[in-house]
Amino acid sequence: MTDYAIDVPPVVALPIADSQTQFPVRRVYCIGRNYAAHAIEMGHDPDREPPFFFQKNPNNLDPSGEFPYPPHSSDVHHEVEVAVMLKSGGTNIAIADAEAHVFGYALSLDMTRRDLQGAQKKMGRPWEIGKAFERSAPVGPIHPVSQTGLLNEGPISLRVNGEVRQEGDMNQMIWKVPEMISYLSEYFELAAGDVILTGTPSGVGPVERGDTMELSAEGLGSFTVKVV
Image (tube, helix red, strand yellow):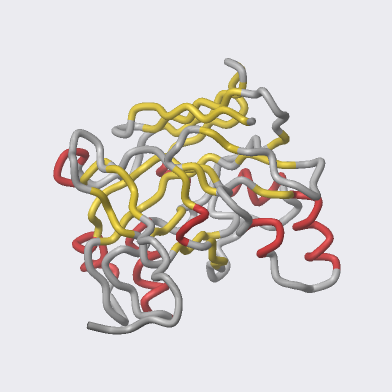
């Protein structure tokens, strides 16, 4: 038995819909500007250039249904996404083989301290302070691919206090799920427990304490998050 110098940190695990088992998380990859309309609203050319990714921490994922408004920001934005959970991985995965590694999907949010992210961009610095803060990725129950089938199209939306803020279709992703998996595997060794947030449609915007966000997507039902 290994003797550790400190208490072993808890395993980050997420609930699976209609199951008593949980999904342990290894890494979290997030693709940036993967819907053309969102790229445009953020001031970028939507042409199909090589994808780029940033990371959140596993314990940023939060299934509680509450999002605590974070400190040191007055401009926190919602970004609704579909998260892809992997059951296996590897390196240099062919696009044709990529979806065989998918365990399931979940609704998620990439909450962003936009003011802090913007300041980092201007200085050419990393985004973690704007993206990878505590509980910055609310996530709904995981729906196994055995139940949903492969999700390559279908509506995705976000309502804030009943008002539609974001609407799109998964088929509008510039880089599709198999391409994301294949591309990432060229630079990282993917493995079971990895999570990929697949990008957000246009309509991102600020939230305030007391707001209620309702996420929905084809095959994944809905998930409600309260800003507290």
